[in-house]
Image (cartoon, rainbow over all chains, first blue to last red; front, side, top):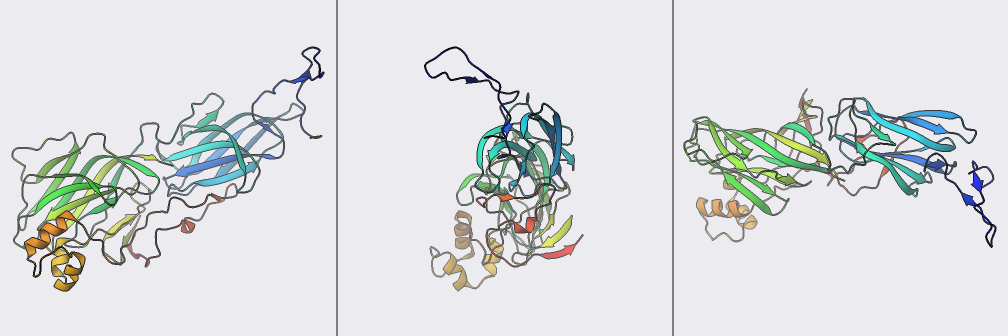
Length: 285
Length: 112
């Protein structure tokens, strides 16, 4: 306790114990050498480097700037760093993506005030949390605390895996992501095998199906057709020769592990699917 | 933006995607075309509810109601409850350390 920066003390008046009262310093976050600034980052964008910078007020009333970096993974797994700060009060802190171009919704950062440096560090407070980009920073004081599911989410256009011939498409929401499915465009090149292919799009939770919708027109041998599922679409009475429209529920949210699949009745061994789809993504932790 | 092939289902995919994000492949279930190409005994083992003998229409109905994962299906998605990994400031953590759902054969690089 001897080396701690002193709090100004004042006696509020006589009382039976003659105790003084402590008046807080310029910030609620006082680093005494036993506390760390912990940075937790959840990221899905490539080549991102986060720069954390700010200013401390030392016990001798000097302003001490600091800056360090954190390179998060790109698979939404938490990347953590704990930094022993200069002794003193944290006056302000800022986080920004100094490398890479993450969209809003791809890099989520939490700044924590913790005691201890090891895996047993005790988190005492969250200083700030929110998404960052190369232009949008996370800052304290004055910033708004956000959860990962806040905000507009990042729009992503994803190329589905091209399955083997005669196999339907399967796409899975990745770990620590939450999706809103906006549209699903899938092209089926039907082989010469004679059969009426009927296409449906299904959504399930990894085990149990909870949505299924199909296009209204069968696809015949040798035909190449696009099956397009979008929010708010209505089934057309007469499908265009090349595009078979159908719908997906509005504002549908898919959790990690949920699956999007095509189900093709009478799919033939040489039929070939490709697909491209649009989602709005948030990090979910 | 490498093109990879899954050694199990032979699907091909880009990882990373064109926008730089990672792609985590999961093998699709067996399709009706694949089931019809399998020996009848193997299909009957997968769908015990099928009559003996079963027709293609019987299999179509059964496979529509319930999908069957392929043997050794690959799933590249991350195990969520992994312990927090702490890295030193400025260091780039290795993503190969990320835990996977299961040990599985390596994917095949097809091209850039």
